[in-house]
Length: 261
Image (cartoon, rainbow, N blue to C red):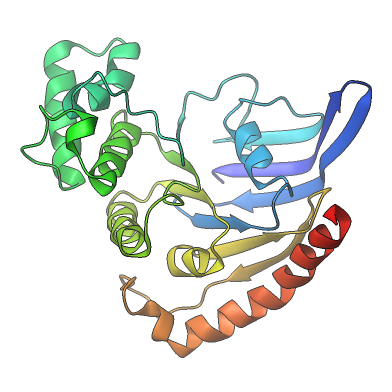
């Protein structure tokens, strides 16, 4: 088992106010599995991911990653958010090298691996380009190469393509799927786009409104083999799965809207 979550609760305390973000969450994710989290805003999807990464402490319960309790920063995962960590004053190659530099990897090995990662994401020949010289989609490719540079077995992706237009999003989804199919990392993918979740994941976890609890888990029974992200939405299995997930998700979104009104 790659990730095991048992009885996890997260309580935020601020200015004498307590907010229960997550309550009694149990979840197992197998090695090499691609799992998507969906739910209304503020339901704790990103909070759970941050606890897997060791960025946030657990109020109650346990999280195991590769059989070991997560205590402090988890250096065995790669983390990518909507606001990427690409530095504007570094070239694409230097940005990809950065996590390797921080780990003390020798220069020759850093350069060689950075070039391989740029090739993996389709940016051969752009190593000397600065982020300002790249399109939004190319910059996301740099961020993905940076994420993959040190070979993490687990990838945590928090709405990584949310800022892209519809066409670029499909291109990046296709790229991510091809990399995952080849490398078989464990992936947790947080998204507000239910269609994106069904397109990419093997299982989709639906969270309730705050305090976040797991409401349902849906296995995506699309035909085996590589998925065509440009055509998969026309598959009847996709339509039925999307409909079932929406039936679980819609009431939670409506409830959060009513509470906020």
